[in-house]
Structures are given as C-alpha cells and as structure tokens.
Image 1 (cartoon, rainbow, N blue to C red):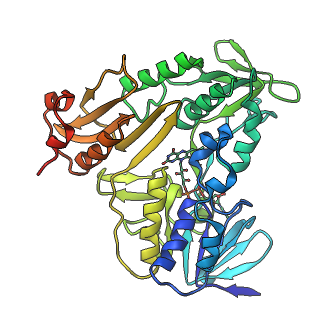
Image 2 (image 1 turned 90 degrees about the vertical axis):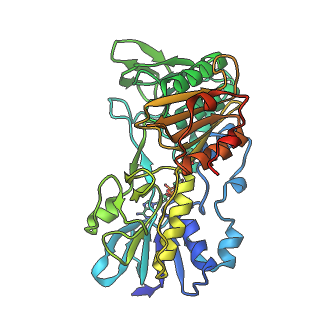
Image 3 (image 1 turned 45 degrees about the vertical axis):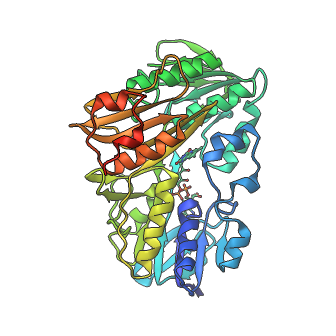
Length: 409
Ligand SMILES: Cc1cc2nc3c(=O)[nH]c(=O)nc-3n(C[C@H](O)[C@H](O)[C@H](O)COP(=O)(O)OP(=O)(O)OC[C@H]3O[C@@H](n4cnc5c(N)ncnc54)[C@H](O)[C@@H]3O)c2cc1C
C-alpha cells in the first residue's frame, strides 16, 4: 500500500533539513517526510574534520536542526531509509524495504559521497574516507600519540584532519598529487602559507606525490608511491574529492551533468522535483556559468529557494559563494571564486604574520578574497566582492588605508 505525503525530501543532510524547516516557516501545513539513509538525524558535517574529530565536540553539538525542533514542526524524519527508486509517473518514491510514499512535491538533497582511492589496496582495513559521522568515529583512533596517519589529498578535509591529528600527537604524512595543496581554490602564495603552517606544526607534507598502492596483509601497513617510496602507516585517510549522489535522478531520467541540473529556482528538469545542496548544479549569475558548490552556505540558501519553489513562489537563488576552513589557530574565510583572476593583491605579510587578506582581481574588479584570521576584513571583503568593486591595487595592499573606505558609496 502506498502512503500519502505532501512533500517528500530525500537526503537528510543540512540541505534537506533546512528545506523542511523553511516549508514550515512559510506556513506550509501539509505532511512533510524527510528520508535519510544514515541512522543519525540531520547533522552538520564541518565539525567532522575539526572539533568532532578532535574529540572536543559531541554529537549533540552537531545537530543541523535539533530533534525537538523537527518534532515541533511535525517534520517526519525517517532514518536508515534508503530510497531506491523514483516512480515519476505515479509520483511515488520507493524505499529499500519496499515501502512506497506518494508525493505532490519532491526534493532531492542527496549530497555526495567521498571519492574512493582508485589504487590496489585502496579498500584495505584502515583505509578510510571522511564524509559521515560514522567515518569520523572510525577515524578517531588514528588521532593518538604516536599513531602513524597518512593522509592522501591536500584539500580542506585532508588539511583539517592533519591539524586535528597533529594536535593529538599523531605522526602525520600528507600526500598531495599536485605541486601544491589547495591548488584548485587558491593562489600559489596562499598554498605556500598553508604548507608552511603544516610543516611547522610537524606534518611531513609531500607534494607531487603519486600514490601507486596501499600495502598490507589484513590491514594497511604502508602507502607506496609511484617512485617506489614506502610510507609506513597505521591508518590512511583518503580526501580526494566528492562524487555527487545522482543515481536516483539518473534512473528517473532527470537531466544530470556534474550534479542534478536545476534552474535558478532549484527546479530540476521535472517541475515537480527540486534539488539543492552538494548534489545540485545551478546557474550562477555571480559566476556567469553553472556551478555545483560544496558548502554549508550553498546547502542552506539553495534549500530555502527550493522550498519556496515547491510552494509556488519564484525566488531565484542568487548568491556570492563563501566558505571557511579551520586549521590550527588559522581561520581561513573565502568569498567569491578566484579562478580566472589576473592579479593577486596581498594585504599583510604572509611570511611574518598569521593573519592577512588576499584579493583576486580580474580586469580591475574584485572577484574573490581569501582572508586568514581577519574576520572584520572578511565581512568587508564579502561586500566588496558582491559589489564587484573596481579597486586600486595600491590602496588595497596598503594596510594604513581602511578597507571600509574602499567600499563603493
Ligand atoms: C569533513 C567535512 C568538513 C566540511 N567542512 C566544511 C566547512 O568547513 N565549511 C563549509 O562550508 N562546508 C564544509 N563541508 C561541506 C558541507 O558539509 C557540505 O557542503 C554540506 O554538508 C552539504 O549538505 P547536503 O545536505 O547538500 O548534502 P549531505 O550533507 O551529503 O547530505 C545528503 C544526505 O542524503 C543521503 N542520501 C543520499 N542518497 C540517498 C538516498 N537514495 N536515500 C536516502 N538518503 C540518501 C546521504 O547519505 C546524506 O546523509 C564539509 C564537509 C565534510 C564532509
């Protein structure tokens, strides 16, 4: 027998939870069912590579929406519920246990999964990714005095986990395949700054490292590089990117191209179905092209747009992307997209200090900024990037000129 719902949301991450709450905020009274294949109620992932991994935050601090709030809003969260099929012609979803739920409106907030390591031994015991609460729990034993942790991938997750592991006394080797860490998202000077910070903290950081295999009999014992080098390991963390969860969308015949293709109102190629968060690929007015973003800001804001769309409103998602990362005492905040910049302006001394701002210009206009340990400058940078301000590089670099004075009037 098919159950009736009004709105069904598949994927109980930050996007899915926010979408449900937004429906209620907007006065929606119909039945809302939130389906998640993880056992946990919706939680925030950022602490998984930061405070939660380090053991300084517990599960309760991670709730994306406190369970009591879900209850108060009559949002029916069903955990451990994997949707295996969309029956678009009947407007029904089918769960792994055979249960079927009919919908009037459907949201896909299925997020993504960590890319597995595509080398021999990549599935040995002790080799793991860091995407879920269960992953973080499994990784915690690697964070202790003397444990040998090899991290593959010098992106945000790898670097944050390295910082947490070093603090716990582990011996950390970080292997990055490219010539520098964070190569896809920052300028070489910023990569250099972070590489130095990690090396000074005690990380053995190797760039240009091609991993050929993971070796071990029952469990991981070493990582082998293409040049033959062997690095002994008790644990291996693989942080080499994300694959968007688009299987359901593909199977249902929705348009998919690096994520579920949506319009600026988060509508998929089926007008009854919206998508938001890490799984969605949207047209960005800011970037002038399609984007699939992996950030909390995107998950939350796009989910609100998707909720509006399900209720018949038209509220295009137009945002300037921003992101943050915590490593040691360094809080990196980023706004905009730096790809395509033709000039980098630094404000502060990256060699001497642990705080600075880096501004990316294209044809004189500010398109992005990376700010370390300067929260007030970041707030101003957000405004300047949103305004696509035309700025004099000399004034921007001059620490005696208040950034505020450069805001367009
Ligand atoms: C370790 C880590 C650190 C991060 N740090 C930061 C940070 O510092 N700043 C920042 O902005 N962002 C950070 N992010 C990224 C941010 O957490 C994500 O962008 C955000 O969580 C995306 O939310 P989402 O709801 O779109 O997807 P997800 O959080 O992936 O949620 C999707 C959910 O849907 C479930 N699902 C998928 N398919 C099905 C199905 N068929 N049936 C049922 N359920 C299904 C998935 O299992 C998952 O639980 C971090 C991510 C990780 C993993």
